[in-house]
Image: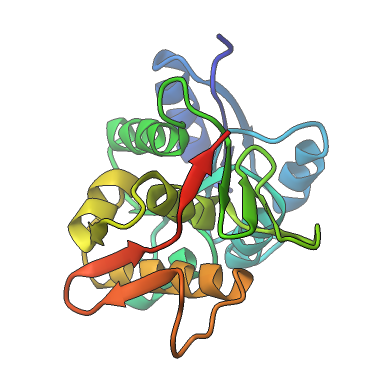
Length: 233
């Protein structure tokens, strides 16, 4: 089995070196970049498993990089930033990041968070990356939804994690605590708001009525229930 590939985008040389060494010792392949342009050029040669992205970049807004990654790649995204305000964390998660780590940090924590992201996206043992439900087909290997007309709609890595969680447990209550434990990240207001945004985007892509969704129901104060019949193939 090939080693998971992790990229590091941070303009601080010490951070790049520290993370590269910690991740390499933990068994990951790494590549580190100081500028967004270098990082994005490297992405043309292949998609990493996990991207670590700083927000304070010299040549690009880090949040713009995160948003583009979420829309165009299947990589997990972990923001590493000195911005500690709740709104910064919420914005990053809403734009498609899977996790948010505040500087300064222990590199062991970053390694643990990377491993958690990789566990979260793996299908069940012997399972499939394709699920069918209520006229839709979700291809998790390509991050696309296909409707009955054959039209394709892409979804982000973060949205895919939530969708897979629902499809693995249809017609069962998924609590906020279960979502946090399964998907990782720190519990709290920023996590809850990020989940609400991801569910809202999934409803839009599934052409749900926002006032009366048919598939993803909110159970106020408890969590969500996915009401469709699901088959994995």
